Length: 115
Length: 113
Image 1 (cartoon, rainbow over the protein chains, first blue to last red):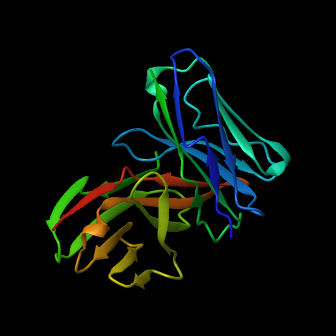
Image 2 (spheres, chains in turn red, purple):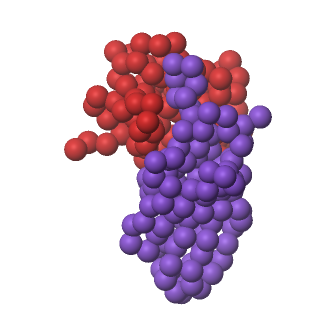
């Protein structure tokens, strides 16, 4: 079956431009997560969507970052006025929300380079 | 503050060696501990350990959860160059009506031929 997909796989942008990253979770998964991973670093939680509940935005590093999830499925992460420190791999994951089963399935990621 | 700490940060061994990776945690309302392998961009799931399943094994990989010591180890026996990767540990806990994974920084494992 189809896994989590992300697009684009690579994005090079100039400092100050806005970018949109897309995530298609596994069909039926109610939870969706965005993470980023800078070179040599661990995963950094950004935002979490669960069903119709208000998203947990506690990991967003600044107000330049925003995300939405339309129809409980596809999600878009938007970074406005990109900075060089935004360069990282952005990973999306989804899970079939259950308080016992916590496994998250990851997409291939989007490598963002801000020049 | 909740945290997950992995050690060592990096490890270089020769093919055929056995390695043990460590993960310790301080997380309120612990529910599960997960191990992932990250080779390129996306981590892939290895094991999930909970109070009802504290030991898992798959081929040359095995993992044990020690709830008393608040830690877990990931063992890889007879290592192969294909085992080279970053190994990530994460601890899951419920958070109000949401769910949260707290991630360690990972252990970078390099297997030399």
